[in-house]
Image: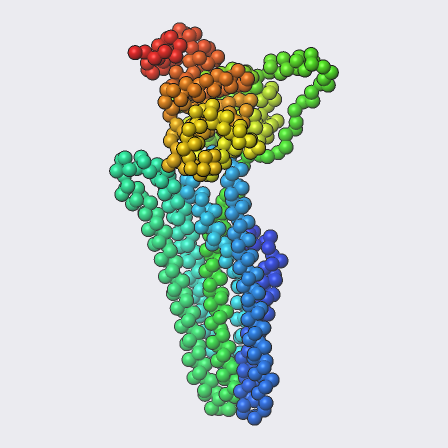
Length: 598
């Protein structure tokens, strides 16, 4: 990361740039308020001069009142304008990051802890509020106020101005020396907050495992290590900020003492009027405002730059292309039922999915997870994929779902290469039941409607009945509209909810990754009946270690070390493939289809 301030400021400015017109309005209001404030000491001088000359006080006092109320109204308008702008900047940043996360490739998202990514959307974006919305205005306004005050102070007395400039210069040097350290400490504090979020999220997700292993204290210490590191860096930043503020406050007060001493001497010499000294002192007191504003906004700017850099890191995540599909080949003009039937027969001859010599890896330097895989998935029927752990079964699904791109070979959908389809085109034809089957935030209805938002309540109840979840729905307070969480549904129920969602989508290809791993025997039998029924009208591809769920598959594909080792039906593979036979024997399944050994 470059240490130059200009590139880092440009990152922060990229968040404010879309709102530059509003920023310009805010700056104009701030400058008007500052001008009114700068005029007040001069008008006060006229009040004092009027006292000395026995002139009327009506006009100067009325002017002070007008300056007060107009200044208050302008400041009020400015605060509302910039406050609302800050919220819009935060909203825009959150929308941008959330969209980037959800459009990114699966490997790019899973590479970082979920909690760390969440902090980019929550705490990092909050730091942008002041930095991107009001810091730019505050810095310019503070600088104008500072210069304006010094110019008017020079108009009153040049000697006192020189004394004041010396104090301001010392304060400026102190800030220039301390600000880089403040920025670095704040950035490191935010990085540790991100790590804390990642570890905490993962720990809460695995809370049962943590408790069973009596690891509460160890995980607490691991999480709090980042919390303590963040606090330590935060304290370091606070110390530097406190030193900067102390120097600023002391510098201005020393300037006031010096001005009183030198000013009293110059009044005694007759070179300065008492009213001029009072006006000069008012400007000196007012110097605290621009100095405070500059220091606050420089500090906020440093925090905002660090947050902006972390947020912009999301832009580097590779995203899935959403280019429009070139479209399917034109269908011949049909003139009757016979031609329609012939077309359907021709379509049936083309596999719904095909992998041709596919090789894939999870990184440019990683070993291939699958090598030279050839696989044909017919439009109807049940294809089972089995093999030991690490054989490449899940990678196969990642390729089919286009979570992972092949490094060699190609995949085809309806005879056309995947590259001719968008990600959405492909996934619209597929349904997927994950092994872990997480619950999506929301209600049971929300979870079921993910794939088919237009499904009716009757359709939802039908698929729930197919997977034997009707009683569970009736037991939930709110039924279909009951909020779901991991705590109120078991692992088996989550699997059945995921399967119901997949069946509701009526996909061309149903992908099941250990979809019955957490089911009891009776429920598994019911689910298997759903799978058999689905296989009669579409393609079903199953990954399973429980071979009892796939022994009646039309085709069983045996994988080992990323390659397809054998394929065939259960009885054929028991005879021809030793690995398959070993897998069957290890699970105590006899050669009699589906019958457990007693």
